[in-house]
Image (cartoon, rainbow, N blue to C red; front, top):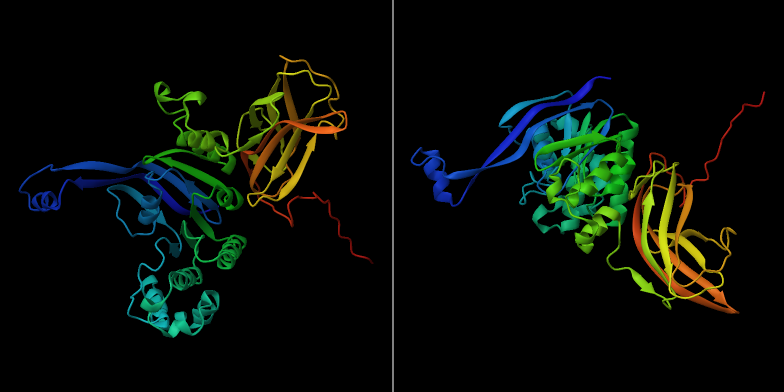
Length: 420
């Protein structure tokens, strides 16, 4: 497979001045070194093959956008080499080249010309662009009269309907309303199916896991690693709270030292969990393990995983029921089970005892984000009691390269035979 983009030992250093006059003095050689250096990229190497979809993730300030701007020629590197094979369409700063006094139509031709298309080529693309933007007769009005929604729709339509060999996307797939976003993602999938090379920067880990063949992780200008979406998403979450293995161990925090936000990022723990119960039982800890037994918040669809939690009891109970359930982010309960349904544990417990519970199953949910809830309940006579319940306490990301209809994959085995 031939190479579409190759980056070798790429450095980008910015000079930061305390005040504008220092910049001026330095430019004229009147006063040297009146600046500090910011290293946005530190010797980054990467190679993207034709037809690949590669995600780039990292915290703010990690160098993601700088890298894309250098690849697209918007910025020049301080040192290093970049080679690109193929025509690029870049979704970086939507509408950056628009003239606010021009009409939408005039801006279409202006942007097309800047990208390198002739008038005849833009003429051929015009109807596709107008249909995609879908802003009606506003295309004949000056852009300065547009709402922000109309502006981004037209800007995105211009960028996406140019026929590139390489598509560069920087946080641009979340523009407009939900229906326009769906249209943007559909176009993105079309590009993927056509074998276009795509470089995709986003903080949306679900989209990264769904669309990308490979992911590159940046941090503070350094390339920390590259690999499968799951591997790099797990590493990214460790970076967010200073737990990545290349960090100085003396600076790493224990779980008790993490803030609620940091726990949410690293372990998927919801800091605003709904919690209630009689107090006869307490769910003390909870986490998810992948098929290798590694704690994670990202599971590959089709693999085995285990949800574990520990429960302590302060009262004697005749037959506690342990439960796990799953919701999507808008609150729809997708599935769940408990030890009573599964006939897995129907025994009494004593005050002072502690139990570890594990639910192991195959991940057949569609790719996306899900919330896990835990419960310890039971019956005292005919009365149902909730001893401890934690709603939406854990978040997991399901990584999938094949989604079907609905919430669950039926894992159908399909045969099609011609009748002779």
